[in-house]
Length: 268
Image (tube, rainbow, N blue to C red; front, side):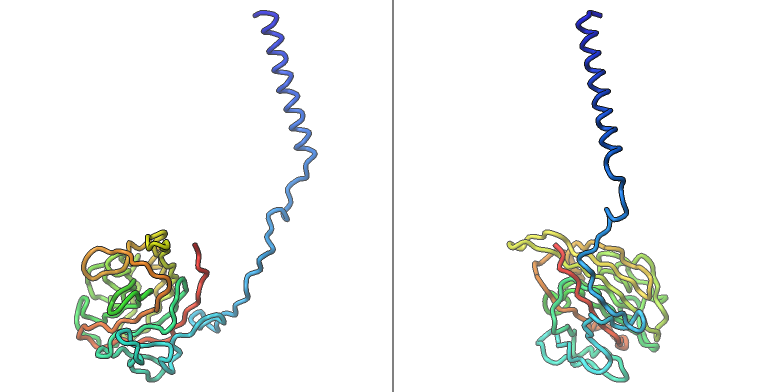
C-alpha cells in the first residue's frame, strides 16, 4: 500500500470517529423522552350520555321509533304517511302499504333497531319472515343497500340471503338467530360510498353489523347496491333515507321496536 493510500485511509477513519463522537455527544446532551411528548389534549371529544341500557338511545341519538308513532317515517312509494300498524309499543309491517323510509336523510351513522318474527310464522326459505333494512334507500321499491331480515332459525336458504347477510353479497360470519317470537337486535355502523363530482366512485360503502351482540359483518366492503337479480353496481348519491321493507312473502308480518340512529362524521 502506498504512503498516499495509507494517509487517505487514516483521514477517513479519523473522520468517522470524529462524526461518531459528535453524534454521541449530541445524543447524550438531548433531553430524554417524556410521557408528555406523546400526549394529545385537543380537540376534546364531545360528552355523550349513554342510555340507561346499551339498547337505549344515547343523548345524541335521533329516535326514529319509540313505540308511539311513525312521525319520522313516510311511505316510500308516494311519501304519504307510513301506514304500518303501531300498537303496544311496536310497529308491525303492513304488506299492502309497502315499504317505508325515514323522512330524514343520512350519510354515515350508527343504527340500532330491534325486530321480531312472529311465533306463528309459516313458510320456508325466503318465504318465511322476510324483510330488510335498507341502509341507504336510493330509489323506489327495493333500490339501495339491504341488510337482510329473515327467520333463519332452522330455516335453510342461500347463505347470502339469510338473516344478517348483506343481501346477495356477504353471508353473515355466524348465524345467531333467536327463536321466532323472540326479539332480535341489529347494531350497525354504515359508512356511505364516496363519489366524485362527476359521479365516479372514490370509495366504496362499508358496513359493520352486530346481531344480538355478536359480530356478523366485519367492515364488509360492498360491490354496489344489493340486487335481487344481476351484478351490483354503484349510483352516485350524497344522503339517503333508511328504509324498512314490506316483503310480499305470504308469511305473517314482522314487527319492529326501539329504532334510533347516531350521525357520524362525513369522512373523506
